[in-house]
Length: 219
Image (cartoon, rainbow, N blue to C red; front, side):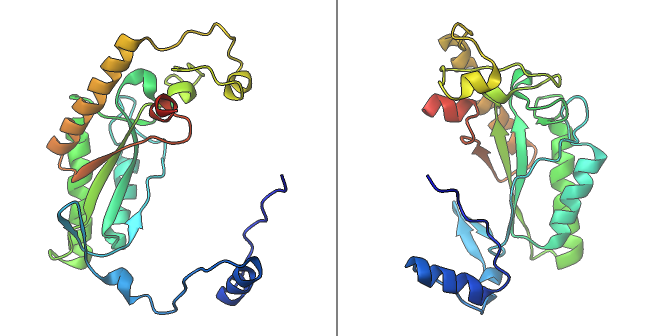
């Protein structure tokens, strides 16, 4: 299979010319005012169509709560004016953290998550006024075979993968997560969703991509 060409277009004209060459129909408009229009999401109004996507900062406090550095980042997102702020991957249990500084939502950290939500909205209000209320969605995750809760690999897998197991140095008899524990992990996601609601988030996103535990379970 030929490698993908790198995205190196310096102008819209160059991009559209390549699309025509490839026979692709890519809608394009110079006029972007639609991005400032309100939109409904799951029955809730979002003030515009701009979104901050969930990219991890790996700067949580040791207990998994948002640190000052984390909160500062989200205050800046709030002040930036996006209508949807999709808060980065947050572990639902300790063995599912991708690194020792990944966010982790528990009863003991829910207060610091509430502070993050409050400060993000306050920054948006200060910059854009009370009519602009961004929606906050918290992404919940278990890192599965990519878990590194103490900084070293501690994979939790639900199936053996002929491509990924050798990459991670996992032998054929590496233990799988037992069914009873999968039930427990499911309950942890539910509990984390309840805690996110209590902290003031508008919704949660279950991270089911990149070969993490939920993705691997669906596979």
